[in-house]
Image 1 (cartoon, rainbow, N blue to C red):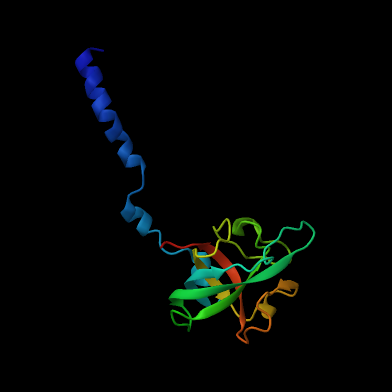
Image 2 (cartoon, rainbow, N blue to C red):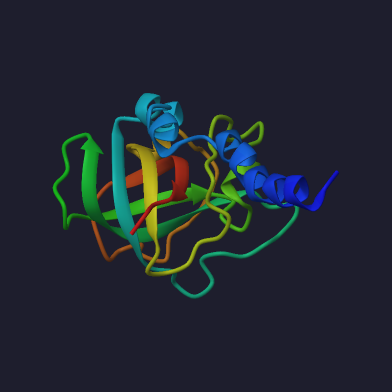
Length: 160
């Protein structure tokens, strides 16, 4: 191979790989995540307001849900308004959402790996929690609100 052919190959090689990546149009046409559109009665983007001390802990032989406080940013499905505060129960919150489901709480999941105050979450929710989970609930807000506690079915990070 002569030098000219070699240089031409080096220039054209990156162009050959640009077709391997899906275009943003192809990605956008994939549509919404069906876990959010088909689970629960509400779909929202909400900011995690705080994580009370002691609300999330790891104990291998103890499955529980913990209640976290959110503020609704956008409503995709359901009858809520932005700015509404929600109290949401998450099952085994110390686990990534993709690993949280088990025989006691099947069907829950998502892409969220860790809860951090201030982060935005995309949530598929149902209410009340008692219709979906009959186990230990860590509720550091007990007695501070009479609002219903929502059950988190699917939780993923949301874009800012």
